[in-house]
Amino acid sequence: MPTVASYCTTFLKPEMLHIYRQITGLRAWQTFVITKERKCEDLYPMPDGAVELAPAVRSNFIRRFWLKYIKREPPIVYRGEYGVLAKILERRHADVLHVYFGHTGVHLLPFLKRWPGPSVVSFHGMDVQARAHDPSYEPRLRELLQTTTLVLARSNSLLDRLRELGCPESKLRVNRTGIPMDQFTKIARIAPADGSWRFVQACRLIEKKGLDDALHAFARFVKINPTAHFTIAGEGPLLDPLTKLRDELGLANNVTFAGFLKGGALCQLYHESHLFIHPSRITEDGNQEGIPNAMLEAMATGLPVIATLHGGIPEAVRNGVTGLLVPERDVDGLFDSMLKLTGGLWPTMSEAAAADVREQFESTAQIAKLEAVYDDAMRLVTPAR
Image (cartoon, rainbow, N blue to C red; front, top):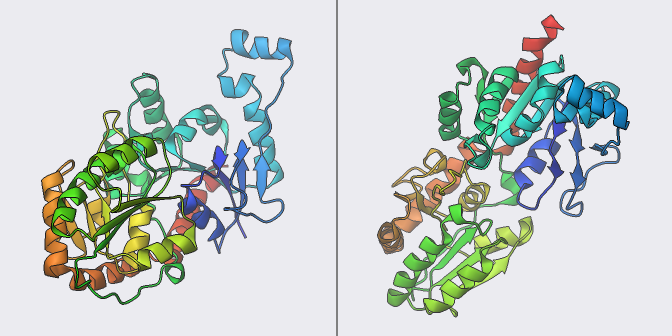
């Protein structure tokens, strides 16, 4: 059975469940993880020996000076990281190296240019944008796209951005998020007769999720349906500002911040809800969504979506069929969508949302497509080795 080395700088942050599912879901390939930092082991357990910590290297001062100032080698070489990574891949007989996140691929570019094996780099959203604080990032990103064997993106909108950066069409592949449908079962719901609609948004509490827009729109909905409730599940730096906004809007009794919820608890929240809201937007630094995982999980349980025409969202939500989509930052549009869905569209869209996700994002099928990418990468490089 061939082996893929899955490289992730931090394995794993709480919001990276989709990566864990992908890595642990492989069937035709075996894998091990290379990481600099192991986190959330209780959330993301791995078999013994499946995670390799790449230790920091204290290189000889003279050798480091020679490599840095005489040979003009990049930091990944003179700091010793190149040698550590090369030895791990050789010892574990890796056939393919899969680098998660484009910025990590940029960091590893000097390694990828020298390593003779096939590499795959996957892009997830913010890693496709230029960085004002680092003018060298985009040129190196463009070079990475020419260097790595294959390039993965979570949505067609990200593929378009990678094309703009000069990635050869022959290298591009879509890497859809796989959702384990048995963990997010569809249930039958009844529309509340008294207006007690239950809205939910699950995400990191950061700007691009549009949570302030969601709160403003929901505040208008509550004036018509005073017993409606909105639960926001997640953690992040905007918790305090969003809590303050909730209270300023008079929603203290209508909005709950539930914190980060694990799979079972999150699914239970979806089962208790009627609508999923996710008004994503592009931030000033160009950060955008691929296709939000929580949105797909919610749809799998039968929640129709109110969201924005942003990033990869329109690839998963059929406007007018499985949900309603409005322009970014359109609070009026979000409010109108709440009225339309709760006014009669909700039952049919609930059924369609669950059916669409099962057809397009079922986990086993997406894992098979990823393994086919690994097969392609090995086939493209192996004859030249």
